[in-house]
Amino acid sequence: MSTKRSLTTCFALLLLALVSLPANAGSWQHEYGTITLDEPPQRIIALNWAATEALLLLGITPIGVADRDGYSAWVLEPELPDGVANIGTRVAPSLEAIAELEPDLIVTSSEMAPASGLLERIAPTYVISVYKEGNKPFEKASEMLTTLGEMLGREDRANDILEDIEQTLDTQRRRLEDAGMTDRPVALVNFLDDRHVRIYAPNSLYQSTLNALGLENAWARQGNFWGFSVVGLEAIAPQQNSRLVVVSPTLPGLPDTLASSPFWTYLPAVRHDEIYQIDSVWPFGGVFPVKRLATMLTDSLLEGGADNVH
Image 1 (cartoon, one colour):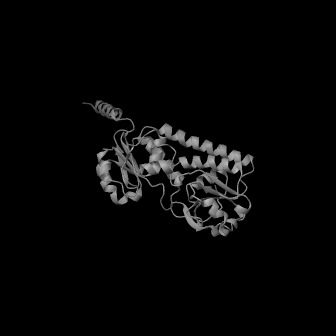
Image 2: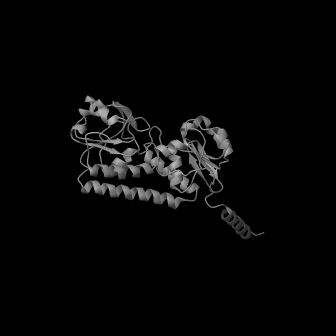
Image 3: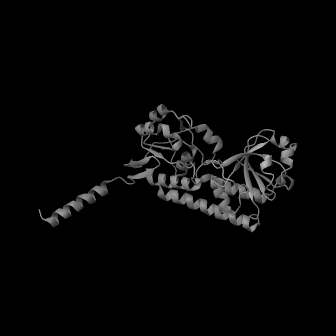
């Protein structure tokens, strides 16, 4: 056989091999190595809520999730359909329950490091941590969404989701700018009891919303890798010119307790009727809470403040 004919034959065989590869077959790097898939997964298990959210945004209902009922109570959007199996808690999922579901992809984070080898024996496992020391949550959540979109043959949908979030953020920022509401800092808190709050720091997921809306975070100190610090109400007192945004839920009876609390009534934001309250926004999620927070925060600021929570 001539050299020319040999090269032609080799090229034809290579082309045939490439054509015969399934669409979306490929390999992806993750925190613990490389995951290789021959075809888009059909049966996926998510071991944290950020991963659950990403799959639902892509139009994929996982066959099992960790802390299923908690997701529906705390994350809210996107909604988790009925019939999804609960495979245990996020910190200690049941390997037996996972194996029984026969998944072809498991999505998890580095919190599950001790079990990573066991998970790999069950199914290909993609490890990505949205919340980890030094990470920027929104960027890592966007990476997770985009990578899952590639694995599942839904790249366009992933891009559309991120574009929609960006457009929403731009719209809400213009609303605040038109109303002259971007001139003073905002502190975002959850109440733990009548004396202590979880306050969200510049390394939180919430910070992405504040940045996009042109709002300054009144709390300038870095938090833990989840992006928050636990402080007493007195720690907020020096923020003389800031608005205080309370993220629900709040404790039963909290308004009455605060109304008689000198720690609360002393706060400048209380005296200036600059207390705002919004519905629950999961602070440890993926990309969607950034959009949810932007709309609710803008609506609340434009509606005006009060001197107490409700």
